Length: 392
Ligand SMILES: Cc1cc2nc3c(=O)[nH]c(=O)nc-3n(C[C@H](O)[C@H](O)[C@H](O)COP(=O)(O)OP(=O)(O)OC[C@H]3O[C@@H](n4cnc5c(N)ncnc54)[C@H](O)[C@@H]3O)c2cc1C
Image (cartoon, rainbow, N blue to C red; front, side, top):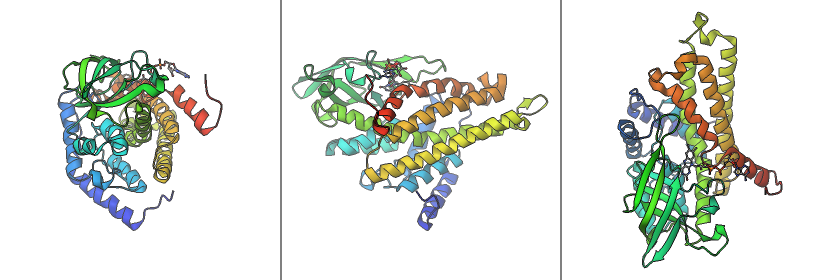
């Protein structure tokens, strides 16, 4: 792709830059940064998404007729970069924006589009993704949560696990088994489940970061109307793959903003923390490591642009999303390791920089598991990119 900005792109950048200057809220400094387990921080992030929405800057890649901006590939890249440069907060409704919304646009009924897309953009509807179960993670098609048709409803019984945002979610993109005889990929259906439906209970799981960002979700005789099927009954595998490909393609794009802010803060901190009586930034090893972290983030940025190019040509995210997923997750773990080495004991303190360093280090361990483990992503790259035989 051509990385030089055209006059139109410059105008887009300048408009968004000016808007950000006037609208980015003061940074969150009350501690628990990164914690999405509830409370004031969530309200702060919701307010930010609403501000973006009201300014016409939420879901910029979504088609205009669904409330997006119909942004070009290059505009999406500019958008992310400007958010990072402006030190803007991340988006709380990320599952809705990057995964559920695009899947509803691709496969949803007109009623579903009318009902859900605008609230997703505004951050009024927070979504969670109910895919994984205690016995179905990497082998997702083995999922066992049952849905039996009863009149105009499905009656759902079973359990999901590791469901991020379920503790605050309004809706869940839920995979259930509706056919018990067919091969396992062919008996799955995807439902748009209202989390307030009687029979759904959410139990938060405490993570090593101290957060309770993900949950167990139990379904006991939960009635979900048939009109809430996304895609076709028993063809939920196609819906799930569409959602997962959108997740892998989009997560790397949004996550750059967080990484860039984090690296900028680390570079700034390296000038103030002490190492042998001198600022750490003067230490040759620290400088090497920070330069390496910067290079890796640039590689992520450019590869994201490459993935967007491919997406804009084919219209569907491809296996490049897996390359990105492996890269950003492992890169972030390396960067957080470097941060701990530079900051020393300060990096472990909850009241130093609002606890961001210890939180980010501990949270990064999950990066190579969530949204498909690194081993599964490498299998996808081996099979779909390199054309190697299937694993067994
Ligand atoms: C922070 C975080 C947030 C999450 N959020 C959500 C969410 O919102 N919604 C949701 O549904 N799920 C969520 N998950 C769950 C996540 O998708 C699963 O943990 C993941 O898919 C792995 O499944 P599993 O935990 O059952 O591990 P398993 O599938 O049991 O895997 C165990 C190990 O075996 C390896 N392995 C498995 N199969 C193969 C194979 N064929 N080849 C090579 N190695 C293999 C895996 O790589 C892993 O190392 C989240 C997980 C984390 C860590």
